[in-house]
Image (cartoon, rainbow, N blue to C red; front, top):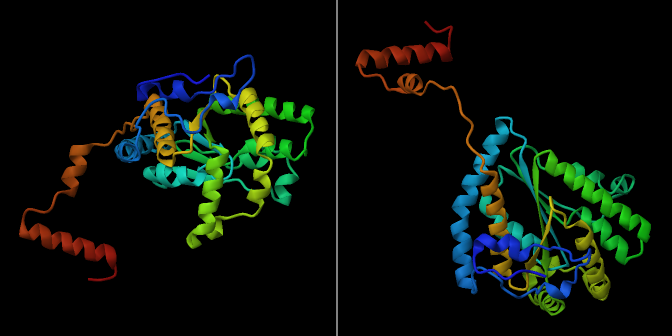
Length: 309
């Protein structure tokens, strides 16, 4: 069961999925309930804006750490039903950080080449490098969700994939990647409203996929598949967080706080250098005498055109 909390310091505890006796009941995780944090859109937007500067600073330090040879990185996994807000989180949360130190990958239906390999093959090719924040829009979990709902794998293969995923993620963590897995939890009614909104807005028609209606008819099957996958793969080293996603503003704030708190825990530092700062500043100082300016200009001209006399 999710825990009550009155402080943003306890957000991870409030949203973390802890299977009871190996079982997760999605009814215990409300798509609308706010257990902690801002309770209005206005407050949430202000709080998210305040996060921006700190996220930039933390991400820059992590990136600099990676350039200096540290192996640490972060992987943010965004998984959820259609319209749950994966691209919205990327726009409004990851967008606060900036592109230099981020690697974003959206996983669609596997290509012929990808199907010819193990289901983790395409995932391993897109993992974040040292100092990077990797973001997966959908992920390896598609291969224990869509495949299960559409009876593409049997129970033995499903269980094998759960074990493979747990071993894979444990290996990532051991190698220095912190994994943040967010289940963007949206209700059946809210999904309908968002699909209708895409049809009503000409600028969003392009986002509408007719197959979404077909998949929507399998809502109970997907809920069951999610519950089983979350129960089997919410581990100590790579837990799942159930993000209430019916309210977009709260969803974005919650993921932003999870990312910030994770980076705070890593506490990346700018690498130390052996630069002789005073000496370098003296070399950059402007000439003080007119003759120095002429000599400097002559030297520059010789460097540009060494044949000139």
